[in-house]
Image 1 (cartoon, each protein chain N blue to C red):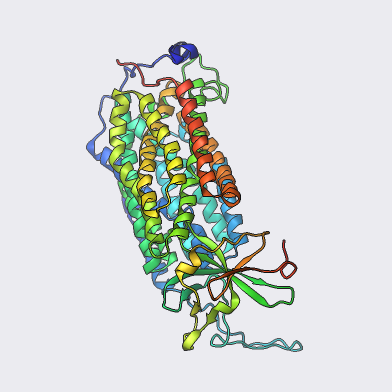
Image 2: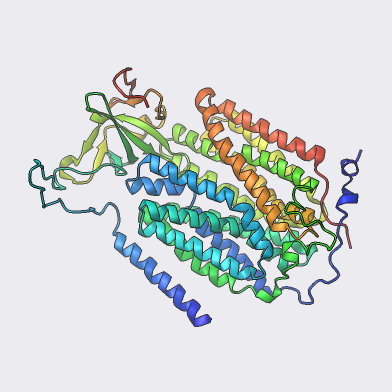
Length: 158
Length: 422
């Protein structure tokens, strides 16, 4: 019984170690750009230095403070991106707030830093903004730190 | 006017003297230290689960809808399994093996979350974790009951609560730092690794020192009715305590998330540290106070301590409504520590008192747990709604009102359940 127990524990430890190593820190790129383009349909190839997926990506202020993660994107009827929903603050999942920030306040890969997203706002400006809630008018925090509601009719209310 | 006499408690549930057939061997130090360690490390392992799952899945590019679905489903599993898990623990003779299986399952679910954060694995992991957690609470209580003599159970449960609180507090800091410095995934790897010392501690408990009959609240007497609800639905002190505990949970559970949100709003630089303090401060007080609660429960009886723990909650709600400074809010969390210390010891202890001689200790514990969990999940939604519409002060005052109702139920209807002196 005992050797078996130890073997199991060892196996678990080794596997867990592999997980930590394999993780290699934050945001490893998932896959290289698709090279095989299906014939017939026109297709663009976006390499990772040109475009990136943003859901779940961390956002920092211009001075490098952690500002939370992008959890959703708001578009208007024309399909223009208007705001990003940021999950901000908290500890171990307690006390975080979701806040809509103006799309133009976000900067992607600034100063040639790939994978970095910065926000033209400070934590002080972000903290007291009204919380984003589904089905309610979205109050967007602008680059100046002032809030402005998206005018009625521009966004789909579900 | 003695409420207990009015209830006819002495007639229906006479104080049961400690069984004459107490085991010949007192539990060894090795077993008791093992149980200390198991409580500590299991609390470690469990800290990564809960609200942190949402943070982790967000970072894994999960949508909020999928995260909501997984959390709701795991909530339902955690609710539905409480009573069956309790019945299983009552019937199982190998409590230590059951605890080992539950601990391994929790570790496995942490590894699944860390390794493959995709829907089927996350769902599987959450279901596995929900079922295992439902087993863990009663199986630890059952091992404790089975290990020590009935007049020492208060002190033993106090130690359980102390080590669990220390484990929770230390793990919260450790895992918060781990998520910040290494990665969110590392939190679950750490949780799985901490299951190893938990299992080592568990196997220090000598299985033969666990009295299987005592662990389920004594064997049911021969003339006991064999209805599945005997000892639970017809057990008035249990129902009164259960009602009080449900009201307590209704008022208690939404408070920390609400306070956390307020911290994030009111303090920009220190919010994270302050929320961490709101989580850790009560654990420190619980770790300090719990053994004292366990000992006093044997000398003072259960009622005064229960009233102390329940009464701290409405006071906390009112103070949260009145106080603006985020730093003072952390100080108010000391009251949470007092409630947690009392309830952490009293929940398993009072249920043990009132189910002695029924053989349904763990089923009863599961029933109370299920009712409280159902109430808690409902009230978190409701408190959030009140907070959005009417503000934090109204939300906290309403919760304080519910808590006060719990105190009232206790004062009016709860009998003293401490067994009579031998």
